[in-house]
Length: 64
Image 1: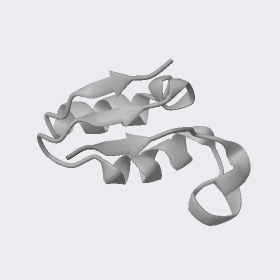
Image 2: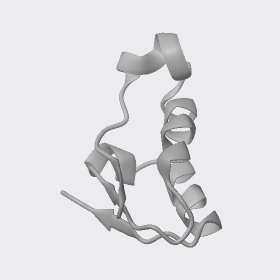
Image 3: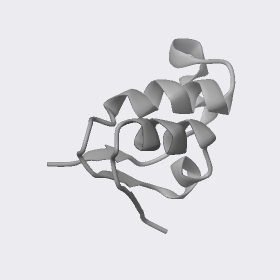
């Protein structure tokens, strides 16, 4: 029904990326074509999330 990305933080550096943008790009993998994605405040600041949403025609629903 929807994808969810709550936060983007450095706590995942040892697994999915060395920078916040790299981590955001990996987390953006949950965004699916034409399926809305709910994102938290830190995810809303990431260009990788915006790009993936545009590329997949997915609405971003930003939660403060």
